[in-house]
Image (cartoon, rainbow, N blue to C red):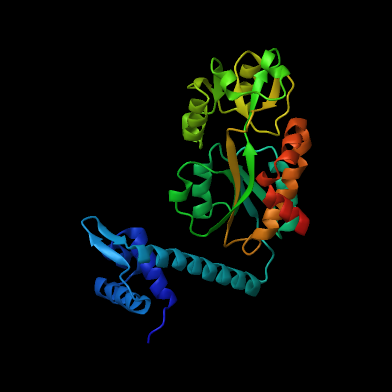
Amino acid sequence: MPELEIRHLRAVCAIAEEGSLTKAATRLGLTQPAMSAQLRTVERIIGGRLFDRTPNGSAPTDLGRQVVGTARLVLDEVEQLVTLARGRSRGGAPGPLLVGGVPTLFFGYFVEELRKAIPCSEVRTEILPGASDLLELLVSGQVHLGVLDRFEGLERRELRGLEIRRLVSEPQFVALPETDPLGAQEEVDLAQLADRDWVSPPDEIVGNRLQILTACAEAGFTPRFTHHVNEASTARSLVANGAVSFAMPQSRGGDGIVIRPLRGAPLMVDLLLATRREGPAAGRADDVFAAAARAYREVLPRNPGYATWWREHPEAHREIDAALLLG
């Protein structure tokens, strides 16, 4: 009986990604009969049909989706193996490590930890306002690793070549004017903010907009997003002068604002770490994660309210705790 080969895995992945046997054949430099023959061979070995022919092209069956998912993992591992082997055979000095991120308060510490953990000539960074654009840089190989928040639609995006792990699940806090009576409370109920003007980034870079609207609807109101700002000092100025906004939990008060947790943590955002399976960080995902864990812990003291929340909610940061324990 014939055995599965790498070319067979590439063929089924190409058909799934192109949605057409003809387009897949063109992409791989094969004739259509040759591509059809490869698909028949794979289906014979697997023991079932992998694709249905539809008016819109080739659609994977349930079995096909399982095979394609596994094939992508195998191809990624092979690609990583080849990259590592080539790097060792060349033996030259390591090149730069390209790191992307969305705005976070621990990123500077992360870069410093990466310098110590990953062999590279230098660490270069690219900060983007939204996670969706950062994911494009990761998939295309323009950055080697990145810190991004989970956004709506992430699971439908192309993630080939990436290892993605949750770093931490962050509660969203709220920033208030220091003159606001709610600032005297240890926690603020989201429903208490129903009549406020909100400061928010532009809609196109808010990755959890539906989550925000759902949480506010459950609290009995629709938020009035009056100010759209993508710059921290301007946002803080607007809050100091009467508006409110969601805030990273490590954010500091001062300059006319206070930072408070929301009662019951109605908004949680997963912070993710994505590492490419090729390039300077290939095979070093655990080292990258440990570097991020150490960096994240450095910013906890910035806000005593978050340090308290952290102690009370170990389920939100089990991955960080495990990485630090092993380190």
